[in-house]
Amino acid sequence: MHGSPISLHVIVPPSVQPQVVIASTSEELDDLVQSYRGTLRGPGSNGTTHLILRSRYPELSPTEVYEIVSPYFNAVQEERHHRQVADKAFEEKARNCLFKFLNDKGIKYCELDRTVEKDGKAIAEWEGIVEVDSGQVVLLECKHCITSVLYSILLTFSNTNLEGNSRTSSQYA
Image (cartoon, rainbow, N blue to C red; front, side, top):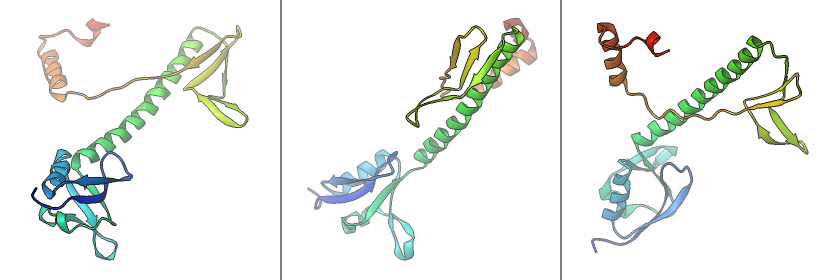
């Protein structure tokens, strides 16, 4: 063994709550931090925080809360926010398409409240609830996921279209 066991309160991504981490050695704690490609951050003086070098791990206090910080998890949090914004935009477009379809077909409808409540508590929510003139109720629920866009593929596709070596978008319709 290369040192004493270390017991710390650590916020381990993606959680925001501290958990007790027990490492047999400083090296084992460092392996945990490095597995997140991160750095350990802890409380400093005057309410500040500071990054903690591996050599200082044996000196850490079991009563303080530390955090593994990593650029990777910042990117994950930003992606989560981006998806939420994109989801709302997608849901609104789908809702508008439903109304356009109903209007184009001349179907009379009444839009209902999108949230269904029981005893004053929301029990269900849809992107749209429409009652058509025949008495049927349409519930609009949208689910989608876009995980990534590969710019190089799009660029290659665009370049081949410009050179005339590929079908144009109108040929796909």
